[in-house]
Length: 82
Length: 249
Image (tube, rainbow over the protein chains, first blue to last red):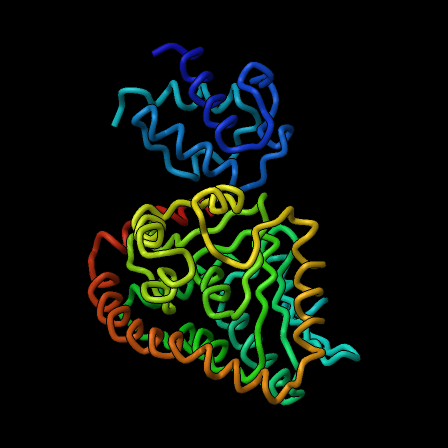
């Protein structure tokens, strides 16, 4: 799986979980908060994306992530490892 | 420092209880539940015509705190939480839950124990108990089916998902209203005013009659939830999940 595919999964889940946002308008260098996500929206996007990608990362390892691109990097590190 | 819970009574005899523990986001710590119950005593004494319960604008309540869960996992019996449900259901005046912010687990139960429930499109609501490995409590297993219907209640309890208010509306949840966040409090106020102008003695009679099914459901819940908690918190897996859930926090 490529990083771009992971970014697409995250974008899809952002669009599913927030109002009036189109996948094509999401800039990965931004934080989900920039699109109006609250803390629980973010948790939901992260857990839906992990389910789609079949990975599990403890919440403590996700605490310092600042934008969508960094989240995708973290997911990429964990792909295929269980 | 502001009190974690405060209340007031206005000239129409409408009481408002505000959960405002900004630091801990209205989680049910020992101190918080004690403060809630003490506040509730004061409100009952003041004999309001109706009570509006509200939280912070982003969080209504997050439910049980880590310490309480650890105690349950250690085999201690914590009856305090059930007392909260009981007190709300047995109140002599109508209760309106103005849930502008997120409500999870025990926080959602406050809504389940109220007479009128208002939610916000933007906020999230979940019976999240199972995410931490254990079975639901505080009356959720019998009261949630009444609020949202039996099938969606099963889904909410089994998946632990945090549903957006707007999503719940689409799923046909029959609470009083699911509105834009900014309209939740004005709507609660409007309903409170309409109730407050009615004959309070007849309202009290009506309240007692209408809450009878919930009183029975709570008794049923207590029997099955206590048993399930006893078993569920005894599983080593449950302790491991609670620890993992709070790791790094």
